[in-house]
Amino acid sequence: MQQEEKSFFNIIKFKVPVYLAVATVIWFTARKFGFPIWWRIEFVAFATVGLLFFIVLDLPSMKPEKGTLNWVLRLLGTYAFASLLFITITRQLPQFDPQVEVDKLNKPPVKLSGLAGPEVIAAGRRVFEENKCFNCHKVFWEGNSDRGPNLGTKQIGLYPDDYIKEQVLEPRKQQAPGFDDEKSKKAMPTYYGEDLSEDELSALVAYMRTMRDPTHIPVEGKFGEQWTWWDDPQIIEQGKTVFEGVEPATEGLNCSVCHGKDGIPMMTGAFDFRNADGKDTTKVPGDHVEKPLKEWPDALWYKRVTRGVPETPMAPWGTIFPHLYLWKAEAYAKTFHDPLDKRAEKKPVPPVPTKEEVESWKKDGMFLDPLL
Ligand code: HEC
Ligand code: HEC
Image (cartoon, rainbow, N blue to C red; front, side, top):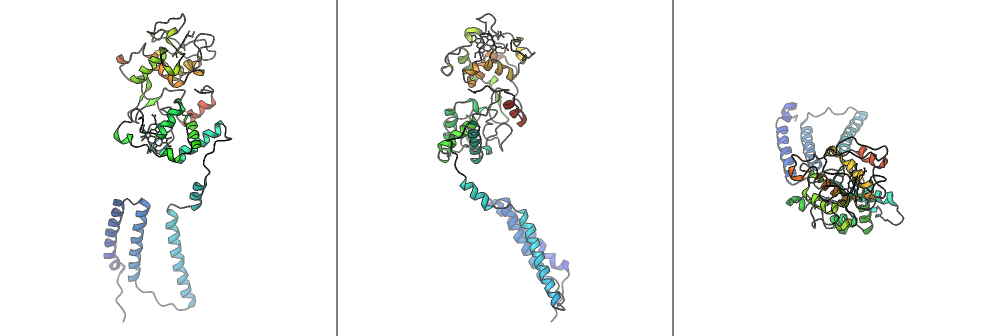
């Protein structure tokens, strides 16, 4: 008995709306249970195959084949069409490459013996990448999110090895400034002490020690609510102890014996920090900035204090004392012409240095060697 053939519209009239409803339910249910997007697409793809199957079932039956050639062609055609469809769809899905995973597991752990400076730093960078530090920390322009401090603009490299190690191994012990909200307090993982070998940790610290900026004072705080050390009362307080020669970490350094405790120079010729229009020295051959003190770029402050002024008592302090403390002394020295409590506005946070800028510091000899 010949069944009545349905028109195509009749075939899909009910199936398509039912399919759309089912697909929507699948999509949102899968999302509710936290399936990643590719899984959800795959679930809906199954529903789509189901729809096609039911449509094909109802299609008008084909005419019986006339000969062998005819049915062989139909068979091959169907097979080719299905294969093509399958390959096209699966090629769009993320590919799993077992070799990549095996390589990751077999990668030899960092071993420092026999490695020299640049290789240790490169190994440390690998540790930083492999432990997903970039997921929460930017390093200047690089990285994926600002959940933790930008370790480049914060200049974590100014800090001693022990401080950096402690921050990695025991992140709850001391919060980064501006990150004392409940969420940030608990964000940094506490398992690095177990995951990292002794050598990996040393390499990591060597890499992090390169995170410095000779053209800007350090920046603190959460992205969007940041400030520079110029306006940080705590830093200025610490800078005062450096300037006045009572900071244990810079024993033997005392700016005030020449520049004066209250800014009145004690030594003839020593720079007077009270004069907002003070001029940059002309005694550094080929290097003079024609700007009054109040407009000095951070880079000039840093250069003069770390490298000194040749043939004057202003010595290259940066070859003897940690630069972490010299930046603090500079933040304090600035208050003689620009007292903190009279400031109308804060220094704007500088733009994050670009890749080109960071590379130029290394090439143009902006850093002292060796760095303290
Ligand atoms: C899941 C996010 C996350 C990951 C991953 C992460 N951190 Fe952190 N980290 C934070 C947050 C948030 C802070 C600020 C709060 C605090 O001090 O604990 C922080 C603080 C730090 C500090 C202290 C900065 C300061 O001001 O003294 C250092 C150093 C640091 N992280 C290094 C690392 C390194 C190295 C890795 C990888 C081995 C890493 N972090 C991985 C979120 C993260
Ligand atoms: C032994 C004395 C002495 C000490 C200590 C000293 N300075 Fe000086 N400083 C000088 C003299 C002298 C000059 C002027 C140099 C010149 O003739 O241009 C000077 C100049 C400067 C200048 C201006 C450079 C320029 O471009 O004109 C700065 C900034 C400065 N000192 C900061 C400091 C800081 C910060 C400290 C402490 C970390 C310090 N100095 C310690 C003697 C000293």
